[in-house]
Image (cartoon, rainbow, N blue to C red; front, side, top):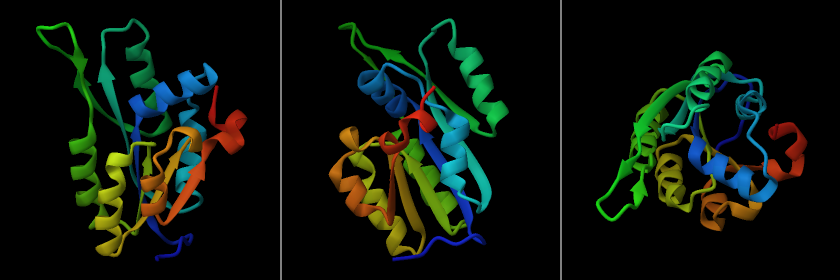
Length: 165
């Protein structure tokens, strides 16, 4: 297991959809991305912060995307797809994983802000490659396999007033 220290270069990858839906379903509140980024960096050197978002043609989403940029996140925007049967789908699992693998080669740590257990295998791979992997999410909705696969886990529900608006 690698250890966190102030000299580390860190990349922060935020699964905005996962965080949004969790915060809404558990607390009917929104995420404070400034607090999220501050905690993820924890005094280390930030190399990149990327928020993965979905464009769903909601009136307030453009101002949300702009706010993320103002905070210090790059935004990766994916259009929501509507299928013939009316179902909708959009996720960033593959894109986020590819970015994590690419960024791990240039960083000491990668922080995954998500509760999605699909990222557990990614955590194990990055750790095997010598990169520290941390996860941030709400324990009630974070997959146990993700918490177990990461070097560290921040339970945002323990300080919900800090991480929620």
